[in-house]
Image 1: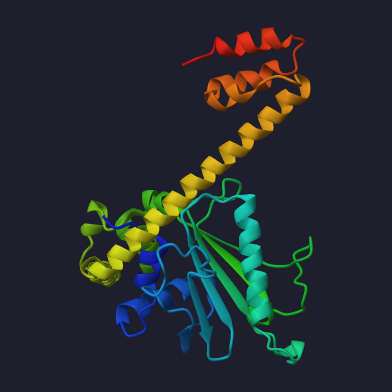
Image 2: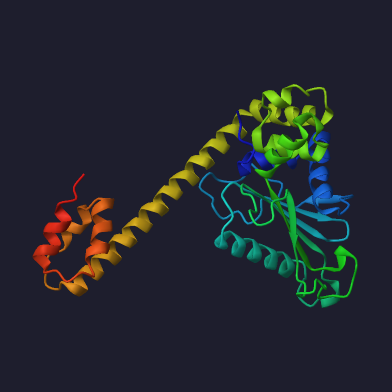
Length: 298
């Protein structure tokens, strides 16, 4: 089963402006998340196959601009929410605002910007499917005195994908709205529970888009190449982090036990490295320290 949370597959489903299913699904995603009417619009980064498998600098998954110049950035994020992710999305939002004003233009011409982040996590403090964030006072007052969302420079919406399973359990899959069913399929694919309701138009639309993706061998090949490249990069990143930790550990030991050959630390396993951290601050001679570490060999 294709994982629709892969950025490549996600973009394929929603960005074909010549496909009525794709345009309907995109409008449903935007309008039901933000209640912002998506009428005439263009996708400013529609290319899919143009992306190189080793390109890791994609700024936006889907970037939309409507007739008034308002921008909507839609991001699919398969990882859990973190402080780093929050900073990244904040940076994306700031870039959206910056890009919406040309050099020499008056600040009054700044347009409304929206971010929709689909993320593979649940907000444990306030569990819900959709949440939104914007600049407000502690009393809930907006920075700009207005009741209209389109007057605000940036509103960020989060769709917490795993929470759709909570909703489905409470309501039953058959009772999900079209929007909820679309999110359920993004999260779980067209599983046996969904197949029971294959007569529903929303299920048929999602299935047709998935079938077109499955039949597009070139797209699937590129998607696979990209995922392998990203996975390799992640492994390399983890390996570099390990190397950095090992070097820092070695430096600490060298500080306490100078003039000793410490190359043996490079061959230590994880348990031995943990023991080094624990024994480093005990009152031991270098010989005692070394012998204690060597006992923990797996």
